[in-house]
Length: 447
Length: 159
Image (tube, rainbow over all chains, first blue to last red; front, side):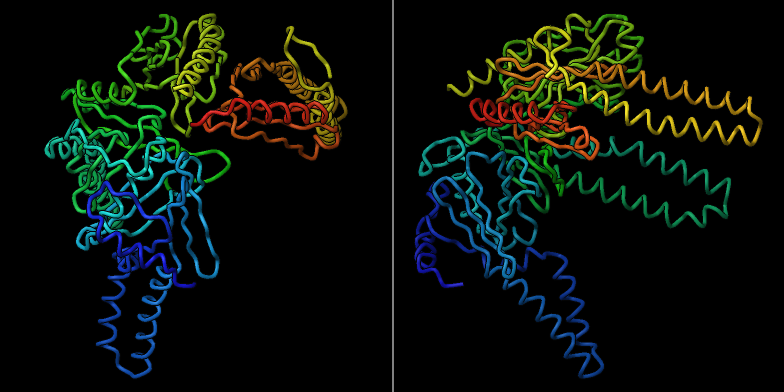
């Protein structure tokens, strides 16, 4: 690859521009030179440690040589990876080029961006670096990453990308953030432990029964049980550290979520990109009045791919009180909440286990539905986000003259369910939701 | 193209029924003969005839179910959205606005190709949307595809 003269120049310019509000330069940029080190993260450092030990303890010359070659190979691969990767903010698209043998050139149109995350693993934090993860709808892979940039650069690029998303001036300074909510650490730990408690209890019961009733089997199963327990502990630990210091702020960019103990994440979701919000009240949390909020965003989580866009969920409130949750829902979706109505009494025959929660309602702009058997789940969805409306009527529902209406938003799980409504009302609801959704959409696009 | 069903609604081609008939009747007939002959050799002619009759009744039942399912398919192109209605046991009605369409898929499996039919499916960004219309005659499938693509482009909306 030829050396880009602009690159050197822009690098100089960047040092001058210190504040996060400054625009990102046009022209190709490289990732930070230390990227390969962090990118391979613990794996490479562990491997390198082993190799160093191996180098020291190698007993023959050939062995020694072999290990040096492996170590050098790892470093060179990482370096080449860094060398051939570059990115550029080109008008309204972000271009990322990477790959030595198989060139991979990505164009991410700013108007399609669903969310931007700044991810900082522990090692990156120590070195003052950050990765930028950009979520597009149905991109077919786990989001595009720019790993790693300096913190200032990441913040500037994020501001530029989100401003372009809104059609704002890219040079406009990033606005101040208004704090909305911070979740205390004690509550995070308590709630996480409470949710993990049934699993630990079940494990303890199994272990206890096995130990007393069938001692020889217990000895055989001991290691398996130990592994499961270890898995549970790590999972719980990860949940606690992932939600540590959970803070929600708002700015003109959208809603920003910061969290993490060792590695931190700052997620930014533009308000208009929220497909739906789900509020869940698990059984064990109810005595404390706690609940949990999840935001659905059109995008791909993990390695899911295929013709249909997957769904991405982000915790908006890992654990909080109802009034906090309601405030957040209002902030994200607007305060215009519809009245909820219950399905007719005969629906109890069809849904005996969930009837006590079932309720739904809609107004001109929003649909709210409540479902769930043990865990009460409330879905809030703005009508302009509806992708399709469906009516289903099973045999039992037909006998009772009931029907369910589904409102689907982009993604796999963003879904409002008007469960077991009266059949004639459901038919009207189907058309009404389609009409309201259309008018809400045209109202949105005209602004 | 046949316009039966409620006014304004379109239904799949009559060839779809012929296809379903072939798909059920041919294996059904073979099964009737096999069970009849096998039971006849093993347990006498009377039992053979009984087994064949039972199998024929079962095949007839499946055929009846398929017939009703075929009759349940209907779709309607409205000003702003497409409605697809289907299902006998579980009745389903889907409304998909043209502006929400991500892409249109036209597929024709081996059976459908023999009967010169095609399936048109609308995809939206929601995984749960299922607007699929099977058994369309090729001209109708092509017309629907082009019309949907055109309307989708004209009314396209962001996510």
